[in-house]
Image (tube, rainbow, N blue to C red):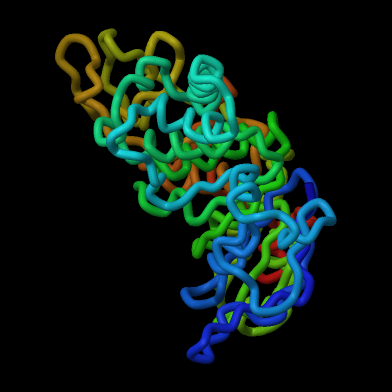
Length: 366
């Protein structure tokens, strides 16, 4: 279901212009991210889609129909909406929170609760959490519940207003992965608001960069915005390191994966002059054993030094470079889809591939 902004402006009685003549189309089944500094009209633009804010002029079309032809409560029940702090009802259980929209839509209680339980599983939460209250959940779990509740109406449209900005970076990355996984299965039309350009280029099929005063500065694919910013404002907003961000769209084909020396957690080890990667019984990385380390008895995880990030084979080359640069051994650990060690890469190997790749954003910008 496509969303179209046609010359949309929002001007408040005090003369403040929050959104100025916005025209763009959010294509059916895609994620479009509104990104920009504070005061650029990102949230206002989002909230005009479900009529939480009424435009001063212009038209918003949903599947070709003017949203003003549908009364606001009916419109909102048919559009999923996720906000920064999940917005859960504190006095209701998790299951009851998720079942809210189906109940408002006229579903009977048993059917609504069954649907809620299915959605908890869909967003990666165990069924037993359905009996808990929001205060008993972590921030990341609360956000997942918020996503489940937004999906409960089974609407083709999902609005997300900085939904992951209140959680720590590790949880945030997991929630981003979850959203991309869900989108690959469900194919919703998603409008996502963030102030974080990294989040925008990671999630968006299209990115709309807004400038202060609510004017659209650039609208295009993440790669286009990074590689060809239309002016100094966009170039400054995406950052001088946009070449590094552009590696998110570059394949790691051609990066040779080398064998890596490993030791087993829970087994005796001998001394060595080299870094060695410790793995568990499933061949999953657990940390690094530094050169010259002496271990009495069996190797324990407390003997290890924390490693850098992991690079999953088949994903963009940015992850490979990050793994190599963040590793205390200067070896980026490569894992398969099951998290098992495949080998290692060095930063030099990755940079050689980047330098010789014709589609490299880094090569374009130096």
